[in-house]
Length: 337
Image (tube, rainbow, N blue to C red):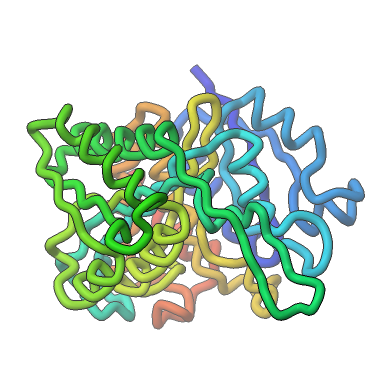
């Protein structure tokens, strides 16, 4: 059977890395067909809005989207297109793996293999209730944490641990100071953890977590935390393994899921054909896992690793001289060998 997914080619380098990713998926014969939709600056120019109704309808219908980076214009529209997509489809779980890859500019060339599970719909990151006093001297915002939001993200993390054979979930919080909001998150996490006696549950304050990640990242398996903390921690983890060029992300809800590269649209190198497609390819691997094709997902990840090890077709950021599509073709040949 063929599964139709919504494909958003994005802005800047987005079309280049998307074309490379679709080339690999097609070569692997994963049974996907594509419905292309616009968002970001491309959509604004073509349709007069950042998120056209047709794009939203496509995601709603297909329930799965693969998305390249989007540019949110400064001073107009949404504060973030990505945040708006998460709100509209209630994509409550942001899943960011960080794994050591060979021949990368990583501070930890081996030993890092963790997943950050970030609550996606609540907390300070959403920016609710922002106000600025008339004299411009005082700014405030509201941070809302709910039991429902906390329960479902922590449960997602523990279910993911069981599904992937991981043994430990670290609940990251600041309940020592933020006793109401972070306190509710921690209390709820403890209640959920009791229902998973086969999974070790560890608790860690967010500032100590950042220090421990830099010193001994191998101690972590799955991290689950609130929105703003997760935003910071997941980028820190990307830095441990070579940067955002190797950082995929999944935004998962009950009725829809969007898979993406988490880096920006890099307009400075757009059109040059030198962009590294690894992050989006790894996002596509997450998508294949979600679609019930774990063998294909593993094959894709192994092909990326083999290509990095071979060093025969790498993009300039990885120390090579190949263009984006040549890199993708090298990965495709190994994924189908």
